[in-house]
Structure formats: C-alpha cells, structure tokens
Length: 235
Image (cartoon, rainbow, N blue to C red; front, side, top):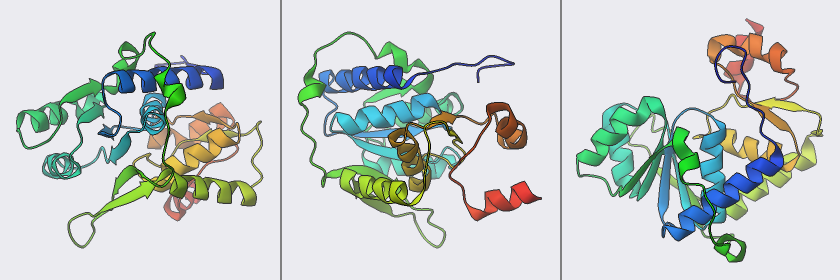
C-alpha cells in the first residue's frame, strides 16, 4: 500500500517481466558474477532485485536494515560487494560507507528508483546458464556471541527448501500471504519463494503496529512466522 487508502496491484506477469528486464540490465552493465548487496525493508523492489540477481548469475548479499553504522560498513567491506541497492532510510549510511573508501562498492542504486535501470535491451538473460551448486547468496548470521559469520548458499540449497515446504503445506492460489519476516533472513526470503512457486498473493505490512489491521484489511490467510510473532498476536 502507498499512502492512505492507495494500493499498487502487481500481477505475476508484470513481476516476471520486470525481473527479466532488470536482470538484462545487470548483464549489460557487467554485473554477472558480482556480489549485489541489498538493504532495506521488505518490499516488492527488494525481492525484484534479489530475483533479478539470481537469474543473471549474480550473488545476492542481504543486509539487515537495523545494523548499526559500524557493523553495516564492516559488512559491506567483508562481503566485497560491487553493487548495492538501498532503501530511503539507509541512504545516508550507504553513502557514508562508500565515501569511507573501505568497501568495494562501485555502483549504488536507490531501491525505490529501480525502474530507471529497467529498459529495452538484449535477451542475453534468456541464454544465461546458472550453475545450481555455485554460490548465489551470502548470508550474515546474527553474530550473537562473536562477529557474524557469512554463510554461502546455492540455488540448489534454496530450491531444496522450497520443494520440501510445498510437499508439506497445502498452499492454494487463492491464499494471501503477508511478508512479515525480513527478507535478509533466509527463512523470510525462502518463504517468499515458496509463495511465488505456489501462485500465492503477497502483501506488505504497513508496520508492526498495523499487523492486526492489515491481516483483516488484506484478507491474509497464510504467512511465514516465528514463535515470537505468534505470541505477540495472542497477546
């Protein structure tokens, strides 16, 4: 939803076409094989960048939007990302990190202006060969007891989880999912792939304090969550 009582409806075919166009832009700019960092709240654009990176041979590096500046800068430095997409609230920190000279970032794009990258181009993405066992995502662990570790995941890893969930849970194309868990967590982003694979509609929350309202407003029938979220709902 955008503003008071304004909604943006996006079809599956539009998502497909925009992901493909963005992936083509990545390839034409020489990003294939490079690491693309993504930071910001859950949104259509966040997942579009992730999907485009996956089909263009890039490596997605999701970063927690709640990171303190020092850890954020260090994460960009450690992952050696060449490209970063950022949300409005992460714009200042992202620019500071780039100006520090400590990162490998060469290109920075506002997430909310992704459309400017999308345009008519070649169809090289149609011929892209993806190695299912190559690293396709670099995930930072929570680092509760020491410095966060970087986990390497392949598309085969992710698809294995998706197919396992599909076998267990009877999703319907009439279901509506609300994307509550942050996409920088694998549980959240893998859950989104599950919804797409099942033709389930996804809606985005207006904020944690609006969850109860949004559940009714959007007719939510399914979501991926953790015990803490369920406990808060009961309270």
